[in-house]
Length: 373
Image 1 (cartoon, rainbow, N blue to C red):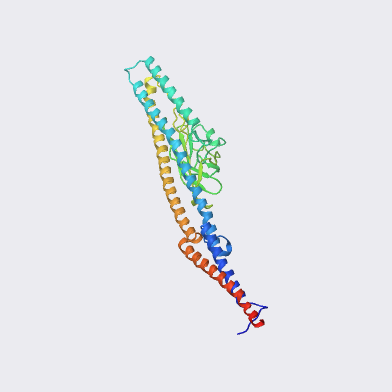
Image 2 (image 1 turned 90 degrees about the vertical axis):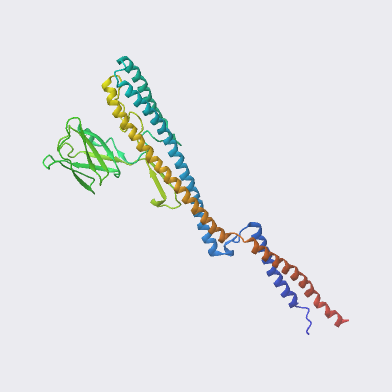
């Protein structure tokens, strides 16, 4: 054998192996202390990129779930107010039925009307104060696109009501000629729809011009005649209804929107402003008016119930997606402690053995001293 003292190759080799073992031990300690298999890009470049994208998706979905939960709270707030309005309308109908009978005098009817008027005012008050986080809910402001006051069609005496049933914001113009056999057209420059109105309504009745493709309905009464709406406009304003982000991405499929109509007693939907129970005839008419108001509230509550059920399923679906994405991200990023303990024990033994062997390798050159003695 050859004995050299300038370069101890055995010690250098033992030192190199000891550094490798120490690096393995340090990495195992880092993973065991952090709980992550990937602590930096060098640990798993592709895995880190995939994991970070998943984390962004997960936190987005978690926030979307909270958004949907808050939307449910908003719906419940509005529906709770509607329930009270419903109760008051039921009582108002009871009063109307009572006042419609000659078993009460006109003086009694006046007293009955006073309670009726107070309930009507309370409905208006509830409609004006019901809000969620600063947004009014049932006073007519929390709804989709609506007819603007700039619409000139309302200047025509024969027009009773114009309703938006899905029309986009914009200006729509009538073409209503008295020589076209009751045909009425409405368009916005891009889409034009024509309906056959037929003869004018008889006295005391109304008819509806239903432009279903455009999403606009125009109700007219017996004062309407062919040609009256010509060049008149319907201006549809963009609504301020609720739009809720219930997904993590910027697409329409990740949003749910809904609107709530005007639930005030004196508004155009319940339309109880001119109702009086002071006379028998007025009380009799009031029964029909209140029935219509109750039907509207029923429909509004039903729509909100459907929205709430939809949001509940949305929350369940989003939470399920979060759980599965979290499981996938965990598989990539988290440390397997059973495996890491095995690697740690192996590296720990190698470090101890390497240290011992390095000490032995450092002693080997001392054999040269025997040759010099």
